[in-house]
Image (cartoon, rainbow, N blue to C red; front, side):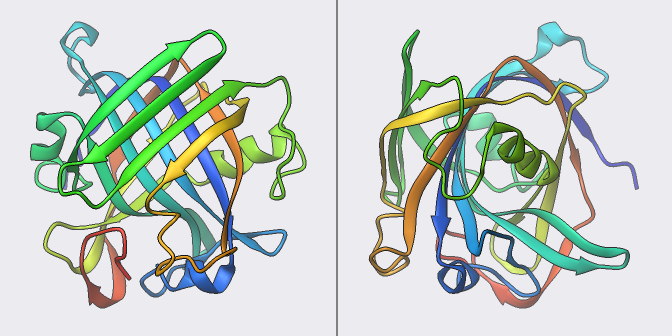
Length: 252
């Protein structure tokens, strides 16, 4: 089976990270996935991605498209045939692009909801806010650049954080309509590089939902920034889970 590959440039990627109670994180995951722990805590967050030059790998760069996108993520691991494997479980993806919403989950892995984005980029900070059109999720995040990663309860320094996220290159997400398989989309790049950020203000209806995260179970931890990184995206073999599930931020 020929699996399509997309080429792109990650123009801007904010990784806003939370440290989460492992038992609370586990309740969000379909078996056999389990939270990947760092210093006894699960790692979850929001990826706020502006991606440009998106096109089939064989197409000229000039034909590529640009869009704003967001994904809620939980770092996960599972037992594979050759040992423990790692990735991120993505209960929800959202996009400003009609095309992404149309092809995602149909022609290419990753079902997308539609959202309206507000973006402001200044030398001293980046603000990305969005509200989904189904009314389920609102996010407003402002991140400023930093020389080093300070104040994180998960990572001792930028190098450790960078390596953690580099290794979690596979995104596993529910298919439209649910079912017993997850779509798999894998990021690959020879130019991986992140810099430190400092969360100035973050509001997330997902992580502030007390039915999903009881008080104190999800704490804003840190932020990372990626810019100008050429990357390919390829479809992986669908991942079978233990029980049927439904799409949405509460998928389990």
